[in-house]
Image 1 (cartoon, one colour):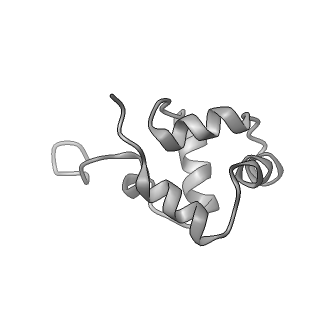
Image 2 (cartoon, one colour):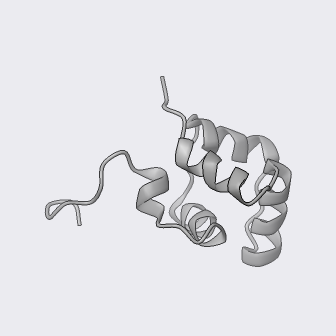
Length: 79
């Protein structure tokens, strides 16, 4: 079973954004069109976003994408 991305959920809640608002901001600020349902699946770990979507989400929350989307921090073998 996919693991929930608790950091992503916490970042959204800290900004007092709904999932719908995140989707709207991704469209407005980055030209990324995804559904609210797809974003919810990203938060739940059911879907893995493409690199450009993951980077836009991280930028929207002013966060490091590694802290949101990867279970393990980068190492010298992985970068």
